[in-house]
Image (cartoon, rainbow, N blue to C red; front, top):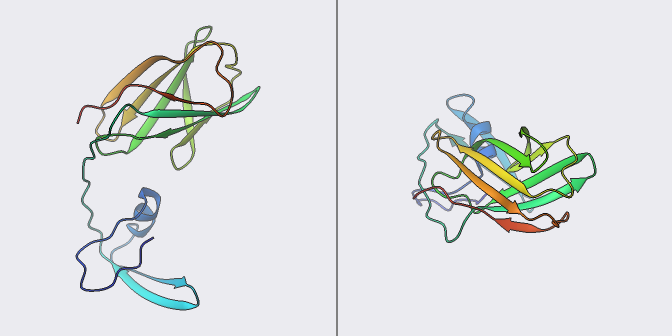
Length: 150
């Protein structure tokens, strides 16, 4: 999180941090940075700003033979993903669960299959990127798919 030097009007934080702060109104937290302690009070207000991205969403595939994980980055629009599904050439659509951040996982062996992804945003828009990862993909590779309309 960025430490704000007053009287700046805004600062940026991750979605997970924002949701944690928004549980009650108002919330006071102490942040410790480099031996100095800063007090901060937050009101339950936020503004979602749509971001325009260059290129498509990026899917970084990791995991093992029976654990499939994908990190989704470069997400346009409001950037908030609420659901992800993956499909191999020999499977139907498999719902993935959020591991943490934008890491999504499922217990499936998808090796040796082209992969397609279906991503749903908080605005309920769904976009499907077919055959993003080719037949010969391997763990650790990143592939580019479609992008939400800006």
